[in-house]
Length: 531
Image 1 (cartoon, one colour):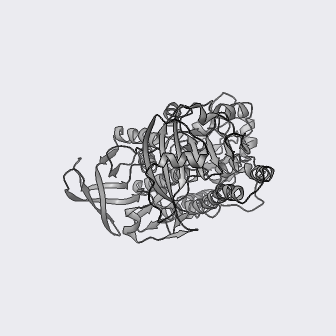
Image 2 (cartoon, one colour; image 1 turned 90 degrees about the horizontal axis):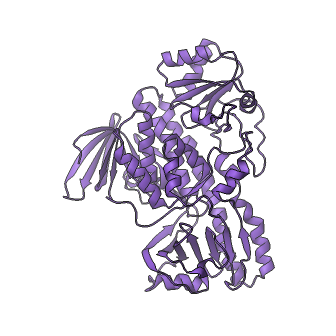
Image 3 (cartoon, helix red, strand yellow; image 1 turned 135 degrees about the horizontal axis):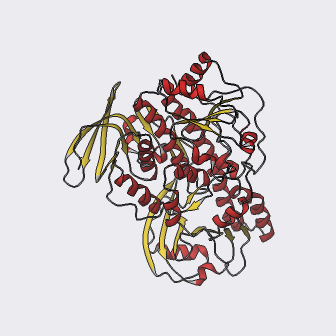
């Protein structure tokens, strides 16, 4: 164990969210210590879907390529099969393009409506392995595995955490300027701060059976990502070939079955041969969001701040967004260029995202629940098909993943006027302050997002260097800012203004056609940094 009694940022939990937070801090040159109770990554696959927006954020950290190498083949379909009688074709098939299919869909688009990165399927345990490996090797990150968080105290100067080495039982104190709880739904950090959670509906108990099988009975209706059976089970194809997870609800008070795989087969409605049961896990599904994300110098992120059912990919992706948002803001605090309102903006920006995603998760979960209920009540096959076809838009709606705007953030320089044109089921991004701006390929073949700096980026599309004196003044005041001059007519048209200030998380902080005077520019910089 590395000796040391102080760290700028202590992160509790080295799952995907905690690891991403540490890598985001390191990207900005900030050291952190990460403590994790386990010494190995999870044996259970957990989540399975990294959406395109998360892949854009992970691309900034240099891990997107490795994630794709470890993930499901880009040619694998992403279909949802809704089955009632396994001897018959599915009642409905929700088709969504493979990664290759999405790349083909967007190949000729360069109008800002195409994301820089499509989604990627990757088991959560493998994502954890990728990110924890990066954390382990990074010189700015002190990863302490086999260490448990016990308690904390804090004052206006920092946080003292009591930790325990699980190998020898030794307890010790570590002082941090800031602490981030990324330790899951049962977060010890959240309990230590006294932060409560708002629940939407009751929790339900589930059983997951993770197994290997190449039995063709599992793909009798073709390859797929997910099967939802009217008998009350779901079946996820984890790698496109031979690993699967079967899941069913286990009512409270009902004993754990002696043979969970047999229950999966019964509820799917057909038999198959399993080569190996890899793992069995019991878990509770919840729809909950923390009452607040901050207590003094302690912050919550990921499942510590919100818990969703694993439907629609909302949970992990919301957490990855939390990690990036909190990471650059903490880096600003450690670096001395953040005002007090910047860290307050973390909750103001990310909690509304969690509340929105909770409702999206609940809506899709409702379809999951109603399908077997309607089938059990005697709904005909045409009725079931009509109901499901009405709901299929939920898996092909990129606006849900890319369309969020930090509209109430206190560190966005908002403007008056009509909102941009958001079209149903189509991304039409704009540089409206608070939004993710359009991703574009420049005439020379470079991706505009790849040219954005690690700190703020002032994108100058004016053609006459309006941004030069503004950048010089910002740097003089110690703000990490890159001036990016773009001479591209198509980019200027889609980015709508001559000057666009982009934050480290690729959200627009301010925009204008004319350069402000010195006093106004000072006011803008104070505003966007929370000073």
